[in-house]
Length: 298
Image (cartoon, rainbow, N blue to C red; front, side, top):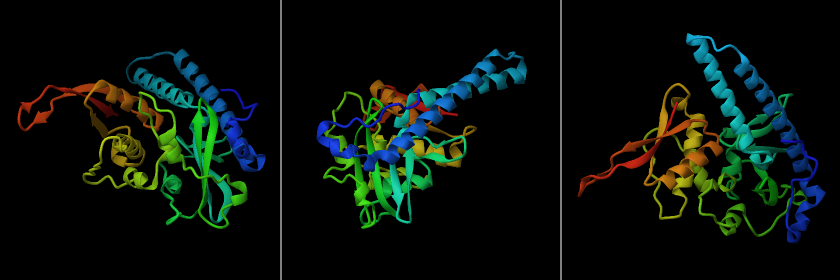
């Protein structure tokens, strides 16, 4: 991607007040820094991949290690190219530090080691999802972005303290969650990482020992939360590292599995997926026809 030369804020006319420079100047600079960093990282990885591909193949262990390195570099490049600056989900401001902290689908450091984005699955990002007015978790304010084709088409601010910076916040009567319900629906489900609420985040980050049962009616977001929890556990649970462990999804049909395969990588789960078959059981009819499953493996 190219460095930014124009604003990424593309709000409709009736939201023109939200593009006041006093409200978005910090974000504009942060987005520019993210864009430059992504371009540099993509260029560096592309060069490394080209060198690896030109190197002698060798044999035995040497050949295997070269192939593994090529696979890792290819996966990392694909991961970086999947999103642009819209890696950024939003920002939060601590009650004791006025500098905003930006939360992303991935963690991102610049060449000097400055944290441009913290990974949404990290403990440091938990207040971004978990803060409420009853329990602000140390936050003064929070901002969530709505991205459409790589541009910010709206954003929502929430202020938790009287010192939360109302003069630098665009307060309105919509939350990102309510707005997401009113947005255009498609035939394909999508991840809602930018609109995860505190009660959903509590399920996503719950401990991994023992069984966790999530019960709810159709359309209440059970699958979405389950996928976000999977990405979180792959990131945080040492039993699911790259040398052992895995996750097994059982689904009723191919569209469901296609959704799983599409959403998990977008949440940072860099695992291979492969279809498998398994038999389901009905107490009345005995073994039923096999259903598709999706297995995430190391």
